[in-house]
Each structure stands twice: as structure tokens, then as C-alpha cells.
Length: 150
Image (cartoon, rainbow, N blue to C red; front, side, top):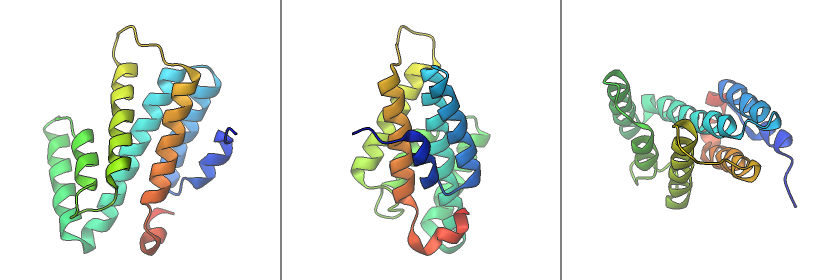
């Protein structure tokens, strides 16, 4: 049975992330499947980074990761895959290995959608990325930090 992707937006806790995911859903509904994938993955990376930032004041490993990510951004370096990989380390422990692998797969699909090539993004692929992002981000939220993401 297919899940109602509009209902899935209710799982998104961060209001800024929800805006991005709402836009991704509008792209999907309009048949702009590549745009849906791009917006969904941007949302995932943004949300994950904001969760690292929220933990940074009380977690040295998160503080160091946030500092490295911010430096990569200032240096205009690609940081998304690095962020995902680091969030799956024992020190950060925000993602399990399967979630990290799935987000990296989503990043690869985002890259296929964002760059000129012959990649065709089907409605099913866009839906898969959209729902995967929401499932993973919903799991990443730790109960003791729920108030940080309202």
C-alpha cells in the first residue's frame, strides 16, 4: 500500500525543513520530479546539519563536525556526503549505516537530477527519495532534543 505523501509532511518537525519539503511536494504534484528530488535532498542535508548545530553546544564531537562543515561551506567545498558519513560515526551517532547509505544514494540521485545528462527521473523515483528523506529525518530526531526542532 502506498503511503499518503501529503500526510508524511506531518512527520517533519523543523518548520524550515517543512517549508522545503512542502515545496518538494508541490514539485512532485506538478510533475517536476527532478525538482522534487533536488528539494528533498537539500532539505535532508539542511535538517541534518541543523540537528548537528543544535547538539553542538553540549556535544564536543558535534561542535567539531559543525566547525568542519562551516569551514567547507566557506571554502566552497562539497560537504554533503561528508556530513552524512560523519553523522554515521560512533562519535556522532545520528545515523545508522543503512540510513547513511540511503542518504548517500539520495545524494547521488540528486546529482543525476541537478546536472545536464540523459537521466530520467520517474514519479516513483521522486516519491522514493521524498519518502526516504522524511523517514530518515524523522528517526534522527532524538527524544531528549525534541524541543530544539519545533
